[in-house]
Length: 91
Image 1 (spheres, rainbow, N blue to C red):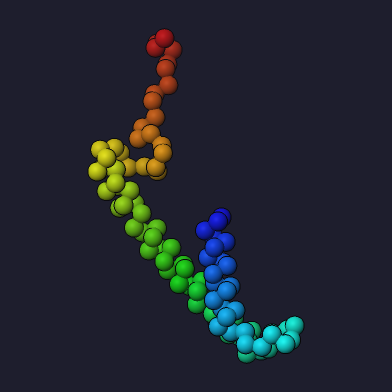
Image 2: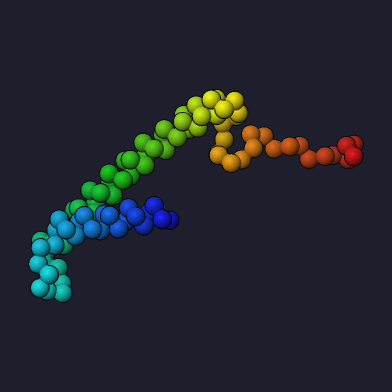
């Protein structure tokens, strides 16, 4: 959530500085509004492309990291394989 809010705040700041040039009015002009829409859309598309690339790379990175440490690949912090539960014959 923190990372999402940081990205959102950076995007808002960047687009505001780029598009809004007159602070004398409460409402945006048509030009400012279309600039903000375009700016936000560009940044959202770029973020989606970056996240898509990240999601594609993560499994390979996790496997490589697991191979370096000699464990099975899986989410960090979880055991490689759960211990079997004792059955009725095991007491």
